[in-house]
Image (cartoon, one colour):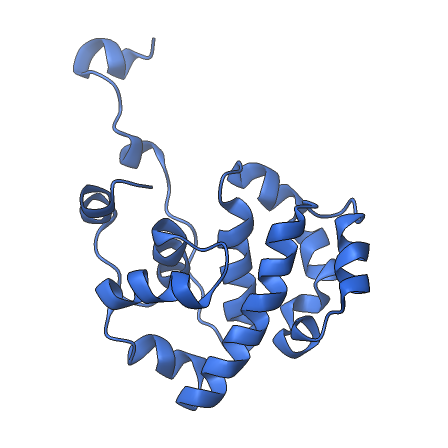
Length: 165
């Protein structure tokens, strides 16, 4: 038992976790990489995903959405055998689908950032994005929006509302 636990009780989960670093996206690949990290971390230890992330960047062509959206079934088969990454076929297929979705939204809104900023705010995006993007739930949306610098509620408020994270 830690000293803090003996004197003040367990350390709250949110006090133990450090928030992920934020980025300023400069290209669509930045959005797809962040979204893909949320997808692959779902149900897994973030440490495992982080340890393999350099391999992900190589295997997924630097997360260039146009390249990934064009991946064929043979490319997906190749990735399911690539030991540099987590070889979950559904998450690999989701990444290909999500690349195409980012490109479509970028075209429809005149920029993917415009979609995020004009999508109705956090409450709407947390419900709408899982409909457009595969393997993305409420916490994945929260993580994604936080990392790319979009407004999100405080983590404690998010957890109270959605019971996750």
